Length: 109
Image (cartoon, rainbow, N blue to C red; front, side, top):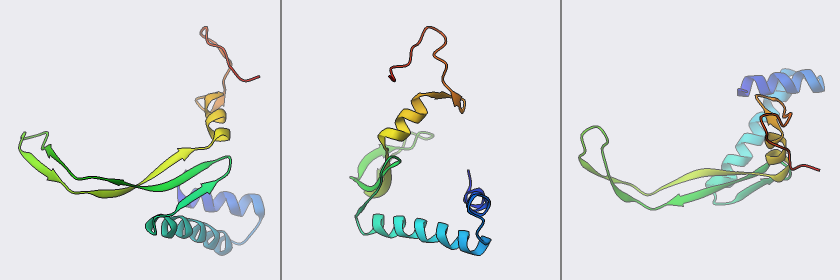
């Protein structure tokens, strides 16, 4: 799903003007981004949590030439799915509910 598709879904499901849906999406994404930049954590219960993860620099190599290179330290976003999202994905295959075929069984009670 793209950002535009997300805005379209908000417009369709909540019957709000496109400008309002666009502003809502911008506000949510902006809040998540600014929180991560400030070193904070964003938790969306049932969906998951976002945090900024710091990585140390290291000595690597160019895979094409084999030449050694220094990789700078960096900060990247990390996402950890929540339990409800993990369960929803575990119970589906190709976007369809999982049937437990091929000798595998579902552990969900």
